[in-house]
Length: 264
Image 1 (cartoon, one colour):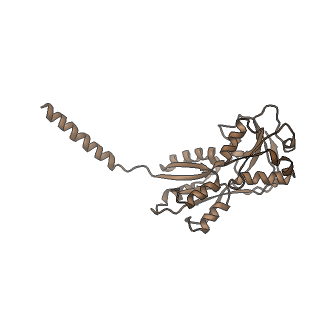
Image 2: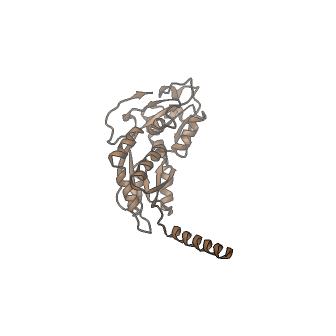
Image 3: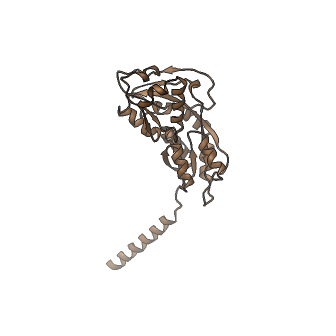
């Protein structure tokens, strides 16, 4: 009798396991996102998954590095870049489902967590500022924009020896928040994020000091031909819900035209 009970339990366990294995898994997509999107992407993914039931895995790095990884066959479904250059490059290579679209315009700030420093362009040349952090302009669009700012204010030659380069905005932020760099250039979305908004002081760089940062999104072609979830996320980025989230993190829906400047 005891043996029959054990056998019955064993059979029930095997049947239950088989049923669980047959349950369809939640649809998942992998999003390759530029480092400036690190904080806002968490909010976007949360809203998207709640709305669609589609799960998301996010890979954060510089746009240039993510592009190289996609070309090498990285299994990403969608690419949210910090500019249009890299998505357009992938499209020309036949690796995307359609041409890229601008989903947001990014803005940059000069940021410090050092108590005695009031961030300003002029103060970058002060001898007390020994290190200025920015992202690698060769792979990170926000680093390229920071270089444009230094050229615009004609101080690049003066501060060149002070520049320290992060491989992405994420690493640049570490240089700034650790105090390893007295000041640095980062995205407005970083300093507006819940994780960082209470840290230090920042200066919004006027629009005319650098070219508008047009951030593009593309759906990557995959061998499995399943673009459904990626298409839905791409469409979601242009929805009222996503635009509201992007705006809360300092992104613009339309190309900036003014030369406004503000402090915080």
